[in-house]
Amino acid sequence: RPVILGRGAMGLLAASPPTGALGRSAWAQKPFPGTSAAAAGAAGPPGALDGGRRLALGAGAAERGSAESRRSWPFSGLATLGVAAAGLRRQCRRSSGKPSARLVGSTARAASVAPPPEGAAKKFVWAKWRTFWACFFGYSVCYFTRQSLSYTAPFLKQAMGWDSLAQIGQLSSLFPLAYGSSRFLGGVLGDRMSPSKVFCLGLSVCGALNIAFGLSSSLPMFALIWCLNGCFQGLVAPPCVKMITNWFDPKERGFWWSIWHASINLGGFCIPFLAGGLAQTFGWRYGMIGPGALAIGMAGLCFFLMQDVGTCAMR
Picture (tube, rainbow, N blue to C red):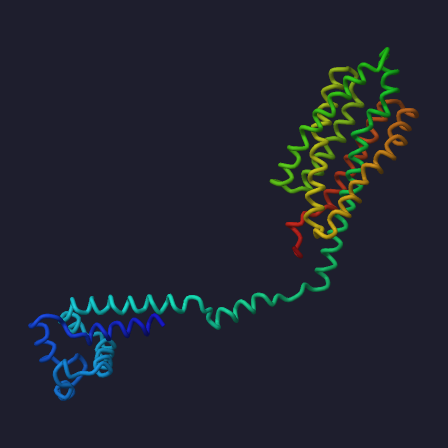
């Protein structure tokens, strides 16, 4: 269409009579480029030419690209070209609201996406449930590292020779403040980084801090390590919420989110037997080292089981 309209505009430019006496006489006496003298004589004066013949002669002149015709009528041609451009703009405005058949066909072809193959669908389902149960059991183990001191404290008090539980209360009071502040950081890191990696980082560091607590022997070191444990505990829950939100549809998201949150109850049920049993059998240090080692092992397992929804081929 641009080529045809361009040729038509050049034809109008070539066929339009110039203004002024000198220009009109030159236009009347000189034939169009590319036409014979007989055809020019038969055409008659410029006023006798009708619109159809003038456009036809002008189109022939434009096709041959005569430089002589462009030199003869420079100013009137520019005016005619402006009129043709204005008509082209009006035509474009009238037809702008009508989509072309080619555009409609390409849109329809793009919308008809083939369904995913059966193997890819199975892979997606396996990755979805693998990630969910890794979040469930991983967060249960994380709860071990959060409550291990509560069930090891009586044996710790006896081994350290403390007269009261004041020292244990000082240690416990630092944890909620650090944990509450770090959950905001965990949410920000979960949005900017891979949620599964943030989860594994927080779980592994909490496990290492539990082991470090079991290897320490002074109250200031206990306070420092337990405060750091509270800081890294906040990196575990927000990534789980992010992954569950990504993998599950809104219509089923609330149900599975509640199932995941029950992992806290599972961890709270198991930790007295784990930490309390180890502390009573082998000493308070093993009551802290055991949950820490289990958390590090679970973090390594979750690193291979979890999959971010952005790296899944089905999404």
